[in-house]
Image (cartoon, rainbow, N blue to C red):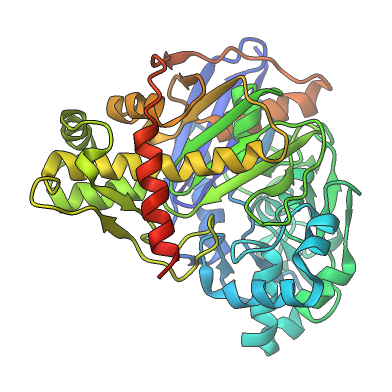
Amino acid sequence: MTLVAGVDSSTQSCKVVVRDLETGETVRVGRATHPDGTEVAPAEWWRALGEAIADAGGLDDVAAVSIAGQQHGMVVLDESGEVIRDALLWNDTRSAQAARDLITEFGAEELARRTGSVPVASFTATKLRWLRDAEPQNAARVAAVALPHDWLTWRLLGYGPVDSSPLGPQLDALVTDRSDASGTSYWSPGDDDYDRELLIAALGHDALLPRVLGPADRAGETVANTIPGVPAGLIVGPGAGDNAGAALGLGAVEGDVVISIGTSGTVFAVADAPSGDTTGAVAGFADASGLFLPLVATLNAARILDSISRLLAVDHAALGDLAAEAEPGAGGLTLVPYFEGERTPNLPDATASLHGMTLASTTRPNLARAAVEGLLCGLADGLDAVRATGVREKRILLIGGAAQNAAVRSIAAQVFDAPVEVPAPGEYVASGAAVQAGWTLTGERPSWPVGVLDRPSADFRPVIRDAYRTAAREYSAR
């Protein structure tokens, strides 16, 4: 049996999945937590990777590994390989003004043409611009810029500061992949190259950037004494951004739209051509297979349900039971769920609002249902934006922890006007990284079966989205 491993270094945790290359069977898994917050020391990801590998029983019997990770996070290194400051994560919105400044300087249409996307606070370039303006001494020290999965791959290969790595600070050994590079706002999916002018405009000077690998390229091989349980000679794949990793893990192909309900919400599709949405709603990313991944992201997703569950003093299962008691449209109660600002639409300073409160509508079941409907309507708006780039879906694959809730699944069939399929629960980002590890090892992309949890019957109810659109317009008109 040949084993391959995939890592998902996400916002909240690190997961390791070890799978049988031939069958795709999951052999064992491991997990470790990450700190909360939007600003995190990369050393915490390295700690968690080691703990998750140990929890998975080590990688001594594994032939190849690849690391997928949260996109956009800014990891800045000095010439000695030291991390200059804590990484700003994708969900840190302090760079919202920096995004506006870059758009003013270059124009939204020009940025979409050059990079496939109009920058928002999530993207790496805007965080570098914030660093330039807010911490110029730190910006001046930057010798290299990496993303979370780039930095972890580099460390796993044995590189890093002299006192904590076998091979030392070889910055030119940094590598990334197309999917993660496309989320920086200084790399072009269409040209397959960095745009140095945009990097310099963001950071204030040029810097070393990771070499961009192809889908099956090897990042290298591990050396001894990196992490306990990691042998020397382990082949390391190029890695991927988390959404591209999930697409690989799901076996998504053209015609599949993936809607993921996690810490953030995402809507993305595998496409055969690059996109460039000048409105900024859709990010024109690359995928991890050599194709493209137009994507819409929302800052508010499963935590909407967390918040309303706490308010009603119930768990998620009981929240779903309450929501199932209410009629579609929640009796006129509509939640616009911008609890943490919002990325799509681009409203970083927004707050949530509840509309249509009357003595009749303000009930526990209606509030529970309004939370689920508000969550799904925000994602349905994202689906419409992805469609506007030319994507024509055959099915929606609904994934993430909240998709395991029966009420969320049944209401999804009422909100989305397309067939919904819910894959069986799984660590799809880590599994996608394992697919990539197998591809790197053999030169052929593995094709592993994906189980199905549910195919809810189509039950589209326009009243839900009509009410949401009205409430969202009222909010925007304030």
